[in-house]
Image (tube, rainbow, N blue to C red):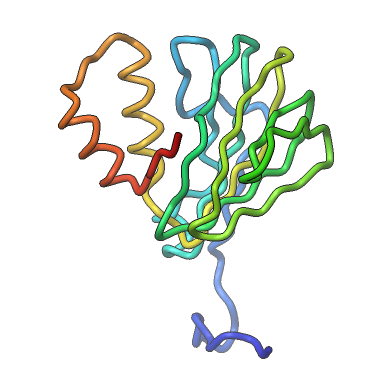
Length: 162
C-alpha cells in the first residue's frame, strides 16, 4: 500500500490549522441533555472525514442496530461506559476502547450506565450534522409521517435492522 495522491500542491505550506478547545460550548444539545461537539465536519475536512465528540448525559439513549452504505464509522470511548453493538452482541466498552465499523457493518451504540463520552468518526465526511440536528428536533417533539421518517433515514444513509 502506498500513500494516496497529493491533495495539496503548494511548495511552502499554508496557515490553515484550526483548533477547538475542550471548554468550547457544544454545537448541539439534545432534549435529554446529550451534547455533541462538531470537532471536524465533512465539509471542514474537504469531504475526507467527520469527527464528533458525543457526551451522553445519563438517560439511556442511542441508536439500535443499523448499517450505512456510504460511510465507515468508528467509536473511541473517552469516559464512562458505552455499549456498542458489533453485529453479533452488545458489548460494554470503556475508556480507551475502540470499535471500527466498515461500510455495511451492523452496529449500534447506547449508554446504559450513566454519563459517558466518546469520539465518533465517519469517513468519508458525510453531512452528519443535519442528521444529528433532525434527531434533536424529533426528540423535542417535532413529528414526521412514516414516509417522511423513512426518507429522512434513507437520505442520511441509516438502514435499520430488526
